[in-house]
Length: 232
Image (tube, rainbow, N blue to C red):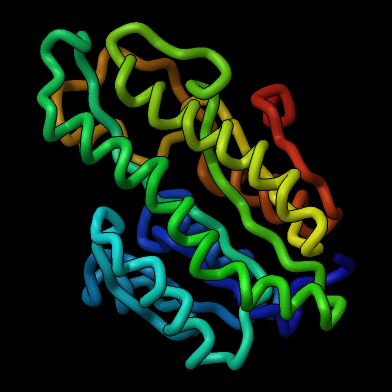
């Protein structure tokens, strides 16, 4: 993919620390954006041109709604970036059932539903030789599960496994998967856990730098961004 100009891209979690940076870069690249967030007010505050759509990712019906919004806005869908996620901290013995359910629903199950809903549109994009893509951000915990983040690590490991296996399945349809696994990034997510409190964390990567690496990988046709791809 030489350029993202004119590509219709859905960014899930566009109001998050990393999603916002990715959206800004794609806007500068000339992509036609559909921006998802949980709050219409926060979407408006982004100041990034594009269609907007709200929805709770734990709701099974949301995935189809997001795809429909992108198709209604731009007539096609050429790429999806799943930058949404939730985090929880604490020993597994203390993690509530509701927390585990939410972690799995948002971090792992929602992207699976999103792919199912988007597959026809992405396959059509491939038929038009537009190199469609599906980007996940499983993060370093999918490579290195972390104590006191067991449930969160499990949800992200599930996401990474989904991306790897579905990526193989979708190659025959011409859909490219890209899973990015950066280390801790200063998105502010750790300050908004759904349970527990974050332990002391080292200074993380800047979201703008991680976003740039992800967008460059999309353009250059990469299929995997391990944690080592963000070092240095």
